Amino acid sequence: MTSYLLAVLACAPLVASVLAKSWDWVWGERPRGILSAPVDHTLTVVQALACLAFVLSGAVTALYAVSVLYAVMGLAVLWLRARRGRADCGCWGRSRSGRLGYPLGLANLALAAFACGVAYTAAPPPDLAARVLVFGATIVVLFHAMVIMPVYRPVLRTYRERADRYRPWFQGFPDLRPADRDA
Image (cartoon, rainbow, N blue to C red; front, side, top):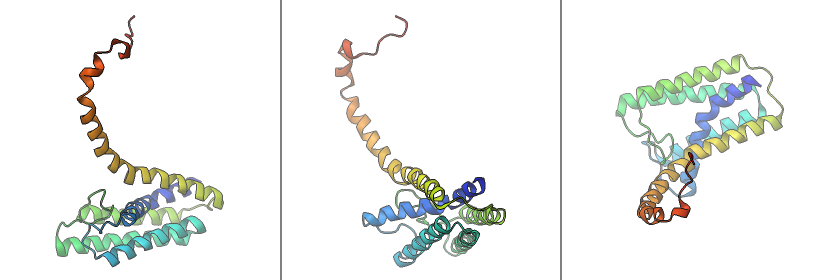
C-alpha cells in the first residue's frame, strides 16, 4: 500500500492541474498559458487519461506512462523557456499563476524520475475499491486546494472588510462579549 500511496503522490500534480483547468472549462475561461487552446485542452485530456489509467488498471506500465508524460512536459518547458523566455505557463489554470522557467522544467523531470522509481520498486497494487477510495480522497483534497481556496480567500477578505464596520456596534452589547477566563 505504501508504494501505491507514493504513486498517487507522483500523480497528484497532474490531477491538480486537470482539476484546475477543468474548472476553468466549466466556467468558459480561456487558457492562461502560451499554448493554444486546442493544444492545452489536449494536454489536459492526456494528463487525465494517464491518471485514470493508473487508477483503474493499477499496472506499473500506467505509472511509467505518467513518468514519460512528466519527462516530455519537463523537456517542453525547458525548450519553451529557452525559446520564449519567462512566460505564463497556465499549468494550474486561471486560479494560480505559474511561470515557464528552469525550476518548473527541472521539477517535471524530477517528478518523472520519482514516478519511474516508484514504478520500478512497486509492489502489487491494492484492489480496485482501495485504489478508487485513495484517489477519490486525493481528488477531494486537491479540488479544495486548487479551486475552493483561491476563490474563498477574496470572499473572506471582503467579508472581513464589511464586518469591521459593525464591530463597534457589536462591542456595545455586554451580553455578547466573551466571558472572562479568569473569573
